[in-house]
Length: 103
Image: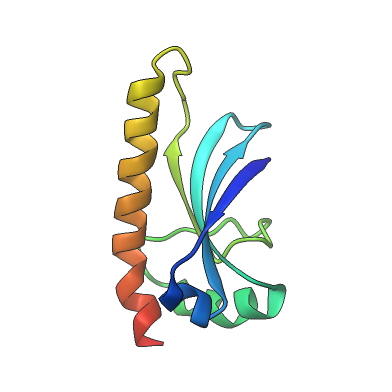
């Protein structure tokens, strides 16, 4: 996998970060909510267990929740691919921010 981490002051204060991930074996772009270490991930994971908007692959110990941005990236149309990724990241952050800031 290849990834790029992002954070904000609010997320960093809670030990959290957003990861934009390309999973080579699956050929997917994903966005993850992750933590600075496994203890942070372990603490936040239960908060998202029964929330329909979020999913978590239990075999992924690096993420609290994940969302696939595209499972068929068109590398020949980079402008559209970038648009899909940026819009998906924005929606993901918008969806999780309320849950995170309350905790």
